[in-house]
Image (cartoon, rainbow, N blue to C red; front, side, top):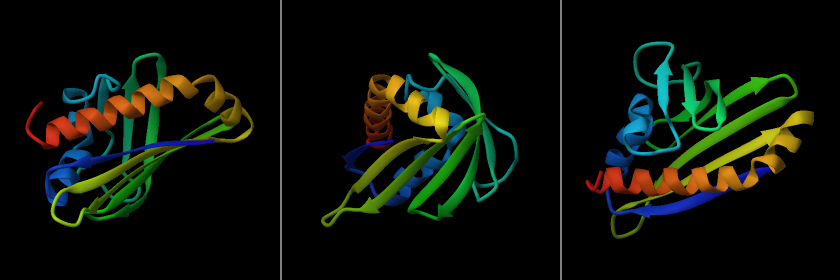
Length: 141
């Protein structure tokens, strides 16, 4: 089960990418993240790990599985019976700005149940994250 949201941001892709990949600062611009703690150093890259605390959800460790510099990264969290995949895509918009697509999918025997159970919460979190990212990149937060 995948859920996603797309938002257009009036900032260049380089700015959006910097904000998006500065994961330890996410709690400054979205209420859906209490904290992010990197478990390694250096720029975000495949294999990078981070622990994310979010309201109403258990603390979770994510591992970056894919990264296309300046364009997208995917990270995955696994647990008994569940695989959560979060993808972050940024692409230039003709005439300036950036289009960002944030998506989350749940798989595994428990993941499909959790995806349905948390569907409304996930929709709210994605909307808050998209709005917060837009405000941060456009200098309003």
